[in-house]
Image 1 (tube, one colour):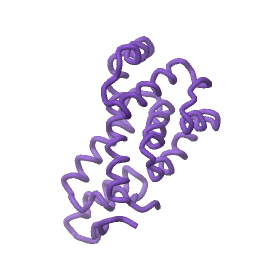
Image 2 (cartoon, rainbow, N blue to C red):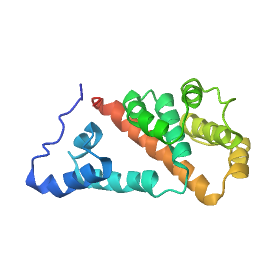
Image 3 (tube, helix red, strand yellow):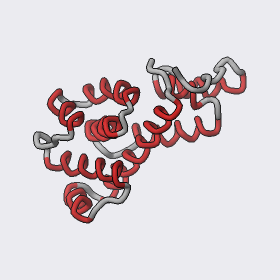
Image 4 (cartoon, rainbow, N blue to C red):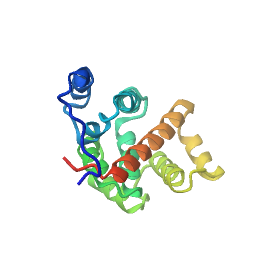
Length: 170
């Protein structure tokens, strides 16, 4: 059960933002129902996460793999459940999902292994070591590295928000 109440989405002042979220997210997930307690935060969050999810040059498959891995590392089951169907539609197979769950990346492609190691180090240690960065640098260009880093950072933010407030699963 969530630690604070969800926003009253019937408030007339919230309607334009609620409609935008419903349009961009195909509904109103509990995460956004909670965020709407602060309309400026909800609006900024939506813009940032829309850029990450819909305007990035990363392949949808890699993006979703990163999101799922962050969810595993942070024990954020809501985040994992929300993104698993997207990951599957984006081309992630069961073996890849299992690798993300266990942290055994041997079966992943070399660029995916580099990105997951970067994700793990960034999430667990904050600072990324030179060897890990070199592996990412050899597999991705500057824009992709920025987008990988922003995706990992954004979904660490999402998982921490979800878990601290204990947002209910749909």
